[in-house]
Image (tube, rainbow, N blue to C red; front, side):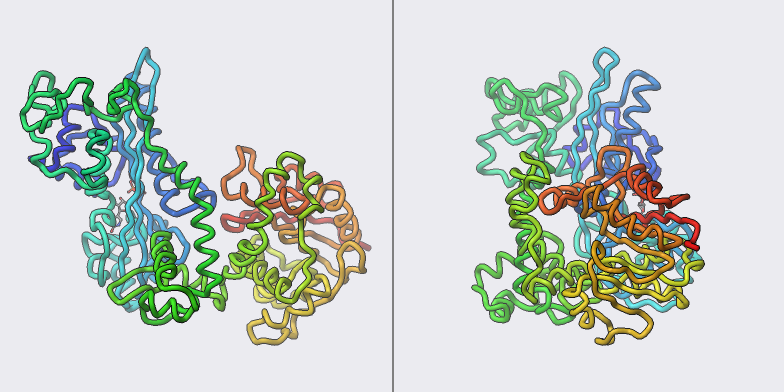
Length: 613
Ligand SMILES: O=c1[nH]cc([C@@H]2O[C@H](COP(=O)(O)OP(=O)(O)OP(=O)(O)O)[C@@H](O)[C@H]2O)c(=O)[nH]1
């Protein structure tokens, strides 16, 4: 039985499910779809940091899975199937993406993170239409994602381990299977259940409707865009030639008068099948959803900045949900404006809306309230107050080059106390997120003293002293920075085991150290200044630890692009590749320069030299 008429549209096509997931196979075959299964060989190793959202990552992975199968099948038979379906399911919590656990400990880490909390499950789906002409493969990809929110009960350690020992978590995103034993861990689900299991069937059908029945212009006014047509709207939808009852063929078999001259044939994705759904003789291109999202991206950023500036996430932190009117009162803003801003924050995944009002998502609680240990509120504020304006000069910076733009409106002298603190908060938020990974990227136990040049609030220095209790660490930064470091220390006072020394690393004497650290410093400067700084440290130490996002050989990863433009509008510096960093370090006597990844946003290089006599 085929309940959904759009599934019927695929019945006479050669459909391939590019997935090894038994759940996806089951969901689609229960829906009446006939297909072959060809598991994808695509390695799920895309750089998560290079995607603007977790779902963009899931969509891209789904797409690559499907494309790999389409291309492989085409190569083998010189004929690809008509349609290849790929999917990828991920779990996100607190900004982290969880996939399938690699072992029991990993499953334990995942389930402990989810324990007692709410998280999101995203499935990205790609529907690839293939067309082979003269042995040439032409592919058209349609993609979408679905989000479902799942809340776990508070679970005991014993129960978690019992569940892990059942073996169920191992091949499941986030380490649980909601359809089986894992269902017992779940308190509630908001959204499509099957999406959690691995395939958002409902959205898939809507997408097929969009692809196979693009609305005619006159219908646009009366058909709600995203609804699945009722079964009686498209009766007898067989693709069999001469069936005579496809409404697209223009007879009256339930076709509801769609037979006008030049009417749409509604056979599938317009681009692939030359369908004329506009009546103008030209096929409309695929809907450029990603591009539109990009065009609107600045509005999303600004909404986030304004919500931070108005302290929306502070008002809602750890508290009961509040209605728009109450929030408006607390942030001193209009009710209608506040409500719109709150709804946008819901759409962006920063807030949740329930019958009782709005509340922070975990992401907002951890990163957007101003007082958390891992708060990025300072970074959002600096982006709003400083980078936003600088980016209005991007065109000029591109036309004239960094050196011409630099100095005109570039880096502001960090003048007022407010600005200084905002700068430090932004740096502190970023450093806190990566400090542990930078500190542990290499074994530094052979060094006895370290100096973090431009170490700002000492976030990295603190992580180093925690990792190497015998390491004596000095933070060296400008006097106007050192003046304010105390308020960033957890105990509200400077710790005894670290020292802070004020100075300018281009001009003043540097503290003696065995290891010099330059974290996010070198990219701020052009090569001549980098050389000046490296020659100041090279003769005095046994090693150098440099933390930067290293440009890869392939076209720049998306994650490093905004930073690269940031440097263009703001400084004369630039991001560099590993050979470039290696060249600079080797020129100053550092040998054996090694690279380690410290998470998605930062890489660490360690270079050593024979200790000075
Ligand atoms: O509650 C549940 N949550 C998730 C699952 C299953 O988890 C996996 C997710 O992994 P992925 O999307 O990478 O898919 P694979 O299994 O590796 O198959 P592919 O060949 O398509 O890459 C998926 O199987 C979900 O069904 C679950 O069962 N319950």
